[in-house]
Image (tube, rainbow, N blue to C red; front, side, top):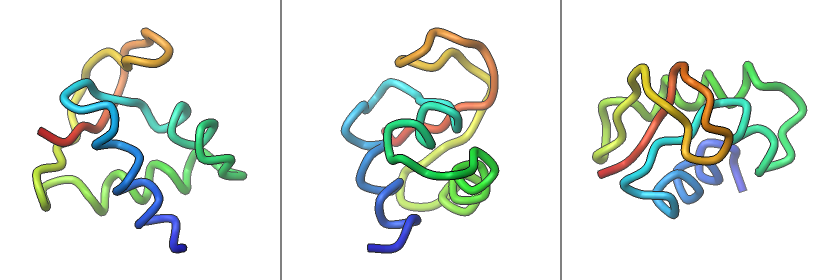
Length: 69
């Protein structure tokens, strides 16, 4: 399964709560947070995904997060 597909399936499971790239990388066992960030940028603005500054549901840290409504 492509990483894009994995992220696209993971993020909605937390809906409507947002999740940050480091948590996505950790939960999906990705080698690089930058990869999660790239995929989040690619998903943003399509199919109900939005990327914004907020608080991650999983780690409670402020920063860039993504969610699907």
